[in-house]
Figure (tube, rainbow, N blue to C red):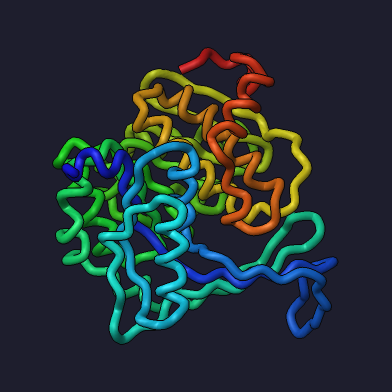
Length: 321
């Protein structure tokens, strides 16, 4: 089967085992809290993005690294079970598979501590091995849990090949200007936007200032998340997506769900405004279940919510993009 038929979306990013404990509250430094629920699952922003896109109906390939340990093999089996092409996921002979420890309270707030392991061993040569997949894809989705050399190689190759580049700039850090100039759409949360632009994002107005900063620096479009909603900005206009009032169990995978859905909608040829609405709903649904992987929604769930809200249900008075 030709590569172009195998993957609409290529994801470059981290692959972890997530260990999650839920308790009544998050511990303070030096504190111990007794939890009441434990989950172990596939995680990492790369893996979450790939599974999220696959559940929404896209053909997805993942580029990343796991260790030679039993956890790495188990994660690869889970990814295949979700329909993700793992042909470009390498098994590192020296590093352990990445791991993340997550703590979540009953309000859905969380803390996280990760040991990246094999994720930090992803090299530009791994990207070169996946060049055919990237060139044939419609969208490259990339995050920052792997080394910048690999991120840069993937982004610049995709841009040169005509593949649409979606960047989830997590974890928060500053980025080279030439990398930003190669990005079609960037989706930072408030913390990430401040790291990129110096703008403290608190509301719609500050989200707009951060988005304008990113567009001035060459990004094609920005979707900046603030505490009360997401601001979408491109040369075509501005869209405000207010925070959706759904009962939240865990916010861990909301950003991953948003970026996966955004990539899927863009790969289907939707406008940035349409893609952002679709992603906004997927993100909200992802908060309703405990654990990032468990919360990633299926296509029919997102479509049902959009149908219920109607064509104007997710935006306010701003002119649509």
